[in-house]
Image (cartoon, rainbow, N blue to C red; front, side, top):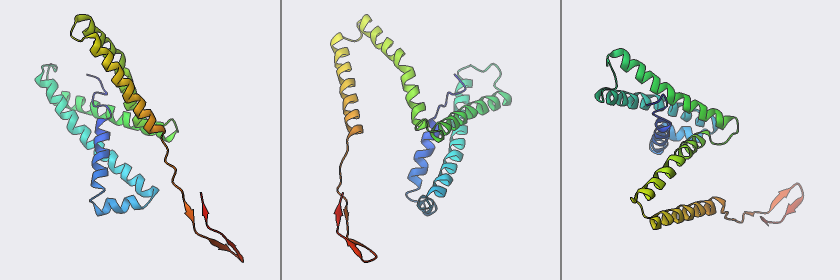
Amino acid sequence: MTIFALGIMPYISASIIIQMYATISPKLIQLKKEGEAGKRKMNQYTRYLTLGLSFVQAFFITKWLVSSGVAISPDFTFYFVAIVTLVTGTMFIMWLGEQMTERGVGNGISLIIFSGIVARFPSAIAEVMNQVREGQMQVVTLFLLIIVVAAVTMVVVYFERAQRRIPINYAKRQQGRKVYAAQTS
């Protein structure tokens, strides 16, 4: 169990909840139409909801730790420190992701999720190789797995790089006494 045990999931959950709620709430629908100021306000709501979800998830993880016998003396202090530590870890990761986005590194939250996936890759490969070695997985299954992963990667790259060219028709326009013909780009 680490400080970052909750990870970025409370933020992802909060984002999804806010986006779904923004389709039915008149107040959030109006905020979406307000441009950059509305976007900042919705991000603020997402942060508040992330904080609330983090507290709830941290509480239940702490209860699980107590029921597992990890805590020597599960008193109020243990609950308080554990919950605050887990929530702080999540809020730090959220802040770090936002800093990465603001400073132009890329979409910070996506990069954090990607780094978590990549960090587990070596152990996953070692586990698969161990299963093949022990006979729990056949070599043919391993090759099929490799082919499926390669095919999925190629399809994702293909769709990511795909472009659709849509012709845009401009009506004729007039500037002063000159009339410009309609254009297509």
